Image 1 (cartoon, rainbow, N blue to C red):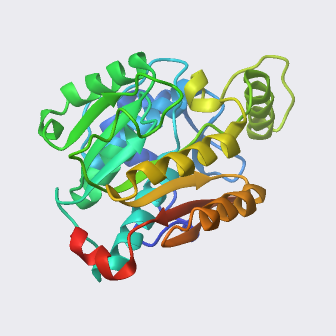
Image 2 (cartoon, rainbow, N blue to C red):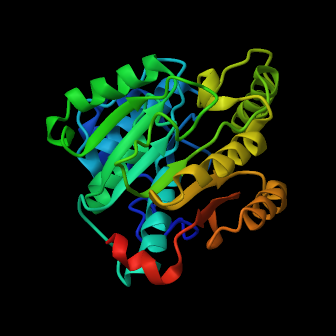
Length: 307
């Protein structure tokens, strides 16, 4: 099988999908698997159910997650890319500790966990971290809780909390007695529903290699998952500004940044806020380039005290 060498070295999905093995754990997936023009097994990634079944099989085979599913219309993220974020976070923490920290002494918060719960599932399985998933959408949290109910071994290590006020990110979530090793976030990318629909139509057309009149979101997504006023830039700026209030309670704040052009404004803001340090960590999944922006208010010499 060909290796996806751009993925993180510890990513379990560096090789092409073994569809025969995946079908063995989720037999229904076989109805969506076919041979492409290169005589390689694949699925049509523009079919949401096919992607959901693929994710279900990947999470069961590689992360021991039982009975994973999400409602139709919710964001169905690509597992390899989500795993990359987790592994690069582990490297970030290792730069302070001297080795990758594992176990429940490491506590992370996933801002916008969604209905899929993917980041906490991968983070806990890979490194044993304790995770808190937050979201403003109660329906998303209800589905995430349903996933946990099918996996009782995760009750003590993955928790969920609703953000009651859309204007806040950390407030109402991080209480005065809380300390987190890191926060992570995949922020809403688009600025409006129209922008999101156009973007997904372009992605759908690329996947199918042909134009279509019907809008069919290939990875779907609810409003809070796909767009917010001002898009990615506005959301991350708000996150950075609000992080000042919790500067002593989180070791590393992090967020994905999809648009490279946004980095200059964001890093300028971090400099103006006089953070102790910030880093940009590049990630590449195939032809798609993304990056993690990480910042901390904790001086370097005090970071080991967090482990």
